[in-house]
Image (cartoon, rainbow, N blue to C red; front, side, top):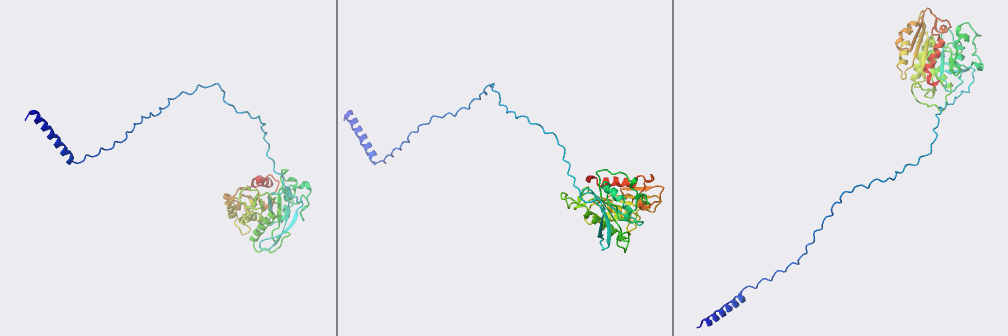
Amino acid sequence: MSKQHKFFVLISLVLVFALLFSACGPEPAPPEPEEPAVEEAEPVEEPAEPEPTEPPPPTDTPEPTPTPEPPTETPLPTETPTPEIQYSDLPADPQRVEFQAEDGKNLVGYYYASKYADAPVIVLMHWAGGDQRDWCRIAPWLQNRLDENPAEMTGCPVPPGSEPFWDPTWFPPMDEAASYAVFTFDFRDFGESQAGLGSPRNWGLDGVAALKTAAELTPVTAFQCTGKVAKNVQVVGGLPWMLTIGSSIGADVASWACYQFNELGNRSCVGAISLSPGSYIDNNYTTDAQNNKEADPSVPVTCMSGDGDYSAGTCRNAEEFLHDMIIYTGTSAHGTLMIDPDPLYNPNILDYILDFAEMVFAPSQ
């Protein structure tokens, strides 16, 4: 066999084997679909931060200015108006008053109205050596309405009388604008009041009844605040301020009754002056002075006596609780007899009463 023929046979066998292998072998896996090509987005550039710019140069435009308001005139300071004075419209003549003590005893007093409403009241209490007529010249002097020519209390002696407290020619002058309401009265067993003293302490009941009566007789105008309890207030509980002044038995009652009256809730007795006390009404004058001093508000009490009188010891025992203690040297005069123009009595009792009243009534003047 020729070489050419052998090469032809070999090629033929190779083709036959190739066809056999392709017919018996596994089918080829289909080609996987190609994913569509995604076009890549072009990168977006982030905006660059603006470069800081310089503020515009200032212009010459002026800032707006507020329109000025027209000038106003400054008002001149005005004086605070003085409250209108309220007059009592009551007569200057002393008015006889009948009233009762707590135990029913009938008592008689005389009321001297102030020319003003809301005036403070001075309650005068006599001694055992006389009756309320001992005050029949001092009361109108304190009332200060002599220019109205008031009548006199029944039984008042013809001036000048036998005692200096009945002679008004030496009494110190009072301020024109001053005018106190004044109340005098007879203790039971004295003057016009009913007799029948059960105990000296009953004179104390008479004193409390006198304070109640004097307060009710004194007009109080509607603009005052009622119901308050306070020191240095013109009206307390709807009542006017009151000062008690007493001689001998009245000296003890002045201090005792002032405290007892205030303890009723009134608090309008604001001071007491005692001329020759002696614990004559079954009381203890020192205790009474202490009670007044330690009260709320405190009530000043003054004790006056001649150094030769028994009452000097009473004053000295109470000294630590007193507002003032005045002992007149060189005299044994008792009670109302110390109301005298003699220079021995320095300070003069009537001058002292005016000063003391001005002190305790100061806000009401």
